[in-house]
Image (cartoon, rainbow, N blue to C red):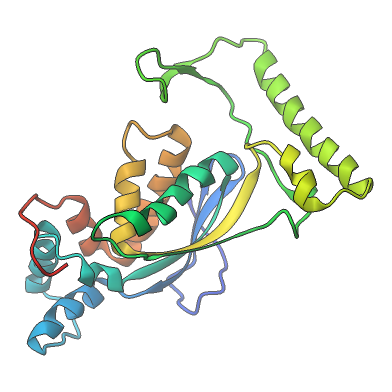
Length: 256
C-alpha cells in the first residue's frame, strides 16, 4: 500500500496537502476540491427547497439512498483535482476514462485533463519506470499477468531493460543536439517514461474509475494508483465514497 506524505500545494484549503508516492518515481497529489458530503445532500434536497449546514444521520441515509437508487447528479457536484505522475503506459489506460465517458450512455463529460508536453519540456529531465521484478504472462488471459515472477536471478533482464531506456533517452538528446524538433525526437522515448498531468473529475466518475482499476483484472501498476486515489478521496467525502462503492442494486430512477 502506498504511503501518505504531506506535500505543499497551491490549494487554498489547508486540509488538501496530501500526496501519496506510487511506484519508484510516481505520485498522486490532491490539489483542490469542490464540495463535501454535505454538497451531495444539499444538491438532492434543493428539490424540496431545503438546505442543511451540518450533516446528520438522516443525511447519511439519504446519501446511501441516492447511491443505491442511482441518482447520480448530486454526486457530480463534488469535484476533485489531482496532480499525477505516472508511467506513460499507465496514463494511456487512465485517459480512456476521460475519452470514454463522453460516449457512455447517460454519462456527462465530467473530466478535465492537462498533461506535460514533450514539445515544450526536455525529456532528459524525465524519469523512467524500472520495476524490481517482472511478472509472468498469464496463459489463460492474454491481457493479464500472474502474481509470479520471471526467473532472472542475475538481473540480466532488469539491466537490459534499464539499458534500453537509457539508450533511448541518449538518442533523444543526440537528436535534439542535431537540431531535430522535439515533437519528432520524442517518438523514440519508451512507454516507461513518467508523464505528469492535472486531472479534475466528478465524484461519480472518480468512483467509477477506482472500481474498475482496483479490480484484480486491471494491471498491477494502475491498481496502485487507484488505491492512492481511494485513500485521498476518503479524506474528502467519506460517506459518499462508501455509499457509491458499496451501493446496492436497485432499478434506476428517472432523475439521474
